[in-house]
Each structure stands twice: as structure tokens, then as C-alpha cells.
Image 1: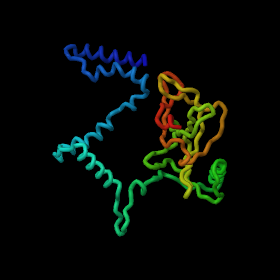
Image 2: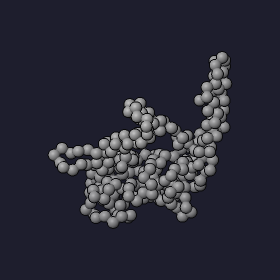
Image 3: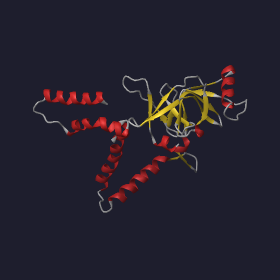
Length: 252
């Protein structure tokens, strides 16, 4: 934060040197408060209002089009609800029933392969350590999977909330592989991380890899404590990893 404050100060000083007759704009002044806001509220992306402004543009545009100001909130609410309902319904040709896109596209699979021989045996044995499955199941491995709009993809900085440890701190797992078993759904292969402490200044949990290798854990999508994918952040010049607090972590 000290480095950020210095950079903001240098930016404003340089601006006045280059443009001595120009006034500091309000948005430039807001930069002065960013370090304090980061310390109080965590990463600034949580205060990002772009998506709210984009959503609001629909209502502003609709208000100009309908030109009905007798009960504007009601008119906009009805129009918006109708639009959302229409977007979620798709009529199948040659069928008397309607299908919902939100249901039709619950699970979207990326590139995958069918595991055979030793790879299949290893996967089945791993899954059986945590779940009751048959030895004859098919196991497919995918590079990504999207469930209800949330994309899961193995990576060095992709973590899942898999439970709570003995002292009540959230337990995260680094997503290593994705296995899919027909009629059983996706299984995530994770390496359990150690949650060291909670940092009040960053509003985040410090995590690290266990000192002694613990092997992999298997958790199904249905058993996740929260369905969000988390990403760790490192302070400049440091080696610690932090995962910011979100509503799912607090609810666990």
C-alpha cells in the first residue's frame, strides 16, 4: 500500500508538471483514496460498478422508448421480467413442450478423453476412496467443465472451497484434474492446501501448500461447500498466497 500511495503521488505531481494550467480532475483525486479502500474492503474488483452500469443502461434506454412515466418502476420491471422469461424459454420444433435453456445447458464439457487401462484403474480406485462407485464405470478426463454457468479448469491458481478445517478456517483445494463419470457427474481432483491464518488488513485467508505431501482428494461437484472458483494473490515482493473473503467462504 505504501508503494501504491507513492505511485499515486508521483502521477499527480507529474501531471501538474506537464499540464501546469490544468486542474486535477475528480477521478484523479479518487486515486488518493484507493490504498485506504483496499485496506478496508479488499481487492477493488469487488467495488467495480461497470456491470451494474451496463445493466442500468437497459432501463434508461427502455424508459426513453416506452415514454410512459405514470408508473415508471412498474413498467420497467414488467418489461425486464418479460425479457428475462423470453430469453430462458426455447420452443422445440415438432414438440408440444417447451424447454428451458438453463436446464438444457446445465453442463458443458471441454476437450476430453476416455481413460483406459492403467489410467482408468487409477481414477476408479481414487474415486472409490471417497465415493461408492462400480468398478465398471466409464471415466472421462476433461480440460474444463462448465456447470450452471461456472467454469472449472485445472490450473496453478484455481482453487475450490472443499470444507472447513479443525479450527474453523475454510479449507481450499488446488484444482488438478477433472473426471466425469456418466450418471454420477463431475469429480474434482484437488490438492488440499493449508489455511494458515486470516489477514484483517487484506480481508483474506493466507494459504500454502502442506509441508508434507498428503496426496489428492476427490470431491464431487454436488459436495462442494461453494461453487465459486477462487484465485490466490501474492503481495508485491512476497511469497505468501491470499484468497479474498467472499460470501461463500463466510457461509461455510
